Image 1: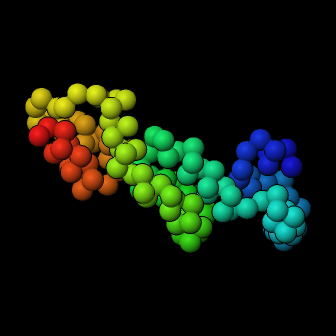
Image 2: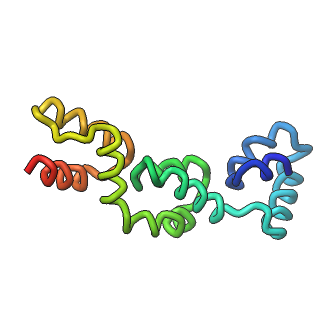
Length: 136
């Protein structure tokens, strides 16, 4: 309960965290099922929370990957990041302005900016379109 009181967790995270302490896998599954029935554990709520927090600094690809790593289903992940899809280009611009703020002056600088934005999880096509608009 104390783990859930601090922040949202996915079912998979809690399974991994408490598997070594549980009497059996079945007893752990029963406890997690009970928490889900009581509304204390929800993968959808976890996915929405993670997407909201990470959305200001990361692109959809990175958020989707992180949700998959945390054991969230593709369906739940898609529901959580649906709102972020509409603001992806604006968020890319905000991240770029905060980190760089000025158009690249050389191909090396442009490549550096592209790599940074790709590591943040933004789509290459979107990065190219954005940088083309910034550099004129």
